Length: 146
Image (cartoon, rainbow, N blue to C red; front, side):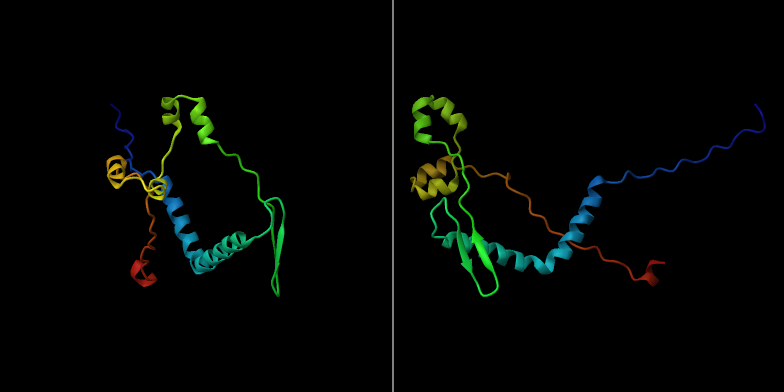
């Protein structure tokens, strides 16, 4: 063996960056920037909803509401497609309909289904949406960081 062996350089392991970390930081930044506007955005959505509900025009007609500074134009209703459930039930088997049907808790409550039946068919499980809470990390003053 030769005396001029190359020394091995010690390997340093670099931790792999979490691809979600950048998204978390971006979400936190956006949330912080939008924070002061959240109440105004909610108010704007409420006003839009209220004005749409107050519209007295025919479904295929427009209506304008004039304020002292702005005019709001409510357009004609858009076309939507709906399934005639009763007609469908007559045309397909009960098994096929069962594969398609979706029943909401609100529908059970609105139609006054017997509470015993509701208790027997309603299942509870952790399948809902996850809440998201954002906390800004504490930052050290410049003199303590050094």
